[in-house]
Amino acid sequence: MADGRLLELTGITKRFPGVVANDDVHFDLAKGEVHALLGENGAGKSTLMNILYGLYHPDEGEIRLDGKPVEIDSPSRAIDLGIGMVHQHFMLIPVMTVAENIVLATEPHKGPFIDIAGAETRVRELSEQFGLAVRPEARVESISVGQQQRAEILKALYRGAEILILDEPTAVLTPQEARELFDIIESLKAEGKSIVFITHKLNEVLEVADRITVLRRGKTIETVPREGATEEGLAKLMVGREVLLRVDKPPAQPGEPVLSVTDLEVDDERGLPAVRGVSLEVRAGEIVGLAGVDGNGQSELVDAIAGLRKVQAGRILVSGTDITGANCRDSLDAGVGHIPEDRHLRGLVLDFSLAENLALHDYRTPPESRFGWLYPRRMVANAKRVLQEFDVRGGGPETPAGSLSGGNQQKVVVAREVNRNPDVLLAGQPTRGLDVGAIEFVHRRLVTERDEGRAILLVSFELEEVLSLSDRILVMFEGRIVGEFSPDVTEEELGIAMTGGGREQEAAA
Image (cartoon, rainbow, N blue to C red; front, side, top):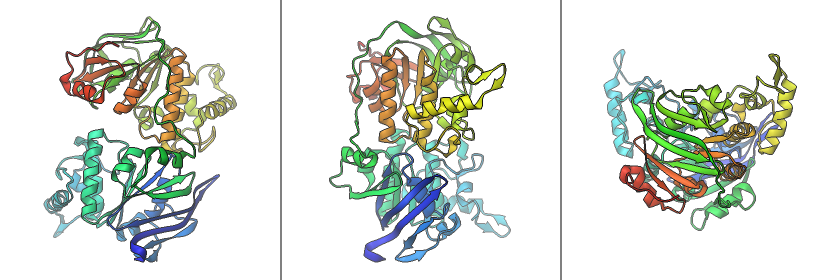
């Protein structure tokens, strides 16, 4: 192993039609090291790791393992070489148990029969060894997202991985689950495992990485040690300019209430109460932040306003129009815009072009259509204008939405919802999974929409985002509003309310 390096990627270049995803990239990894791969969405991070895992073949460059050149032409070859990858979107079969998923295709046998008990025992041993608390016999569909991620890590370890690639591992985790993951990473390091940590979150890099390599537009910009690195410095390396890491906004000038919710009752998908007697108002020209631990009714509240979930009781008014019980189309027509929490599930049709996605709401009306006939050229012309205005990179109007990076996909969703000039904008996790540059863009746009008179209801599990964007903050706990705060509230005060300690608290807005 040359110079203590376990893995070396040298001069890696990968081209796709019209795009150079990796351009002469260099990256190396030492044994027992966490090396973070940092960059904006679309910088080439995932492409580079897909090459290492055998999903793509490089057009140029060399991969060395233990100082020897290796050819990795498939994931099975990568696994044979001790390389495992945990993808951002998990590769688990929901109806199977954790143990069954982990041993799939490598099942232990007793005679002609699969040894499920033996598989569960081995998975339990690995779980205890690396601090990955998960029940081997539990069905995947019944466990949390954080536990599903642990199952993916165990699957790689079961196959003998010495190098683990974690692709945006915290993108789908709550802050509590992310903290548990960092503890797991320390445990893996202590056992001599080497980890490539792909992310765009600066605070996480400074917490878990030993070294940091920054990619920008497919090129290696710099590799730096964690010691002495700062969020501001890393952000500049990522984006190529100074980045505003805080929201700069003038004081709100709120007008009359635009969204009024009164005594709302909503059930979750199991038929159990999720929203319990919620009343709130959002005025024109203000951002109201809805804080709370995931699973306390925020999602169901937003779904009900957007017409995606049935209302059991209560009333919803938008600009004086009663939309209680309205469907999604009626809600949109009444002036509600909705940036959904999950851009893949509800925000985009990934196989559709960007032009088609941008026209999803208004394809039935001029200029996109007339007398039932669609006008694709008009859709494309509109898309060109919108994509330029919202700085969507990685494709044009006819590019499939699924081929864009996560940050650019989110910009498309924001562009479609904002471009309709809604009276009320529901922003559910608007920056989840985004890099600092995209976050800065989305934050600025939300403030612009506020200043143009929109009533914005923001739902975010990132307390820093809630505190920096909101003009008023409401806290939900167990389906109820348990506190209202001004934006100068401390994180500690909000944390108390989020765990039910703020039932009696009311702070002046």
